[in-house]
Length: 312
Image (cartoon, rainbow, N blue to C red; front, side, top):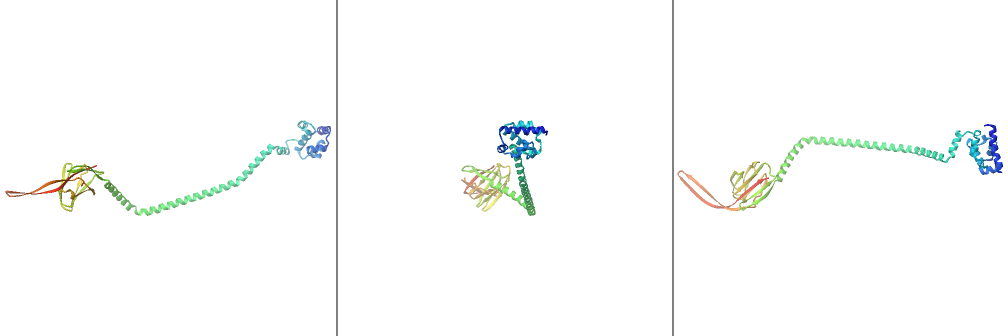
């Protein structure tokens, strides 16, 4: 600093104060700057001020109070004042700047929040790691238990697998056969005074017919227009025959229908809803050498019925 500049700055401020009629005490009360600092400014003793920042601040406040342009005065005597680039000056300006203080406060708040979040985040990570460990252990335990159960069940089942497979196969066959038998049904299509026509739905391909009688009864069985069997059954006797799978129907002729029963593949065929009464004559003859003797005889009244059963 040049001696001329120091005298000029201090003298300028002092002359302005005197011109305004202010004493140092008046200026101290108005600016709240201690009197010893005001004297140091007028004497250019800037080293006695609290710091570099206060030199320019107090000078500007002094100048404004005595109606001088403080900013212009600082600019005019800039070379005579402490540098504004010192760290002390920069820190003090930032401290006194509301916007800078707000930004600094935000930075501090963020830092504080981050410091608080670090332990919380650590706790959360530890809890998650524990939960994941428990879940993995439980999953492994459940898988091991399930595997043991499967192994034990396979051991217990393996001993009986061969017998159960054969029994299940025969059982399935029986069920299938039983299902076919039970699903076969008889339905009457028509009836006349001489007989009736029936339909067997879901008829099996192999048809076994059993004829039985509780009393003496003559009967015949016709398939495809040809008589396949005829004869007389005495009381409590039966006759069984097989109907060809290619046959679409069978016709029965009963001489004594009320005492006759018919079953097809074990299922009873109840045909007795239509009967007619007719008279039949029986005759017998005997032949001897050279002589023929004919005896005729007796006329009996029997119940004759013709029944046709169609397979569907």
